[in-house]
Length: 440
Ligand SMILES: *Cc1c(COP(=O)(O)O)cnc(C)c1O
Image (cartoon, rainbow, N blue to C red):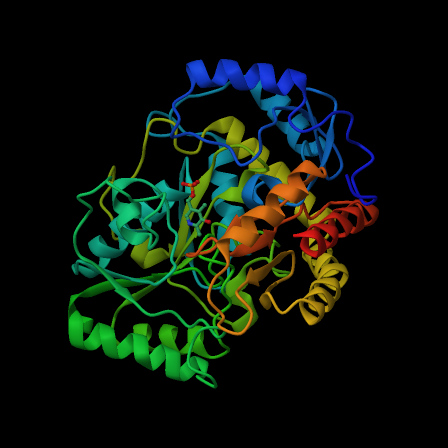
């Protein structure tokens, strides 16, 4: 092991207890539900996860941008305990409770724009996206939903159709929902050199106009920074141009901020970086500090266009998840996690930039706030290098640092540390990543 290996490691990875669980898992769990790391978590802590062999892993993944406030965050744990001691479920369709209402109030206040808003809660991000599409179709009376190359919106049937990548998300899981149109995204690293955000938007708009027709388009759905697709930050001007075209054509603009929301990018929502006001916004992941909760928030007249009883679900807006969300949002405010995300970027980006300077296999460093990534390519050709990416990630895991990969071509290492990660822990995680890049 290298001299930068995490001193918190006690055994090889996986250790004996993890290997035993791995064997039980093989006999009990469907192969389709796989894990990136071969270890089993026992407890959490400040920016670390401790496994069943007592190994402490530095967490630069937050369970995919979920545990932004810490894992566990004391306030969230306390709120869960308190709520669980009073009642656990009523079904909001049967009878209401304050937590649901208050989460909606918070979402209406925190999401971009001072206009009159309403929210509806659900269990998962995919379900929130499904609800946003239902609402948009209902409100406009139109059917087509426009999505982008590299998009990720979930794994249910409709959201598989909205998601771009075949393997592993869609392969042999079709037929998929109809009336989805895919258009090119602004991807500055791979677009023709010098293509501006306006030009990339025009490319997408021309495609919509000629192949769908604005009058058939219910909504344009996009991630303001693409997540699973590769942490792709569109060129400046792209998002405002798309939003403007939507406004001019009666098309709803839906921002999927499930990964980018709640302080992650150094603002409450990524749309704020270019002053975009989405008609509808979907949230989940970091919203409830680790409990399953998701939402659609949007203009009151659009949200309320749906008939009574048209939106819901047995568990939607579960009371414990709502209590956790209120505590998570409190923690974000109190600890100023917007500033914390900016501080993560301040520490991390210069190191990633320096790494890219020395390594011509790193095509681009990109992202915002505490959502940063390295795209690995074959030097000279710019062809994606998923093999090296996988080797680097595996090296980090063996050395005790959790990093995630992503990208349409599996050639991106992405960093999503908890926003509460201690500065020194972040530095140690980055040391491991640097050593892994150097050695692979
Ligand atoms: C994770 C994610 C989803 C899906 O959320 P689930 O809770 O996994 O269903 C949708 N959109 C984006 C942008 C995501 O990152």
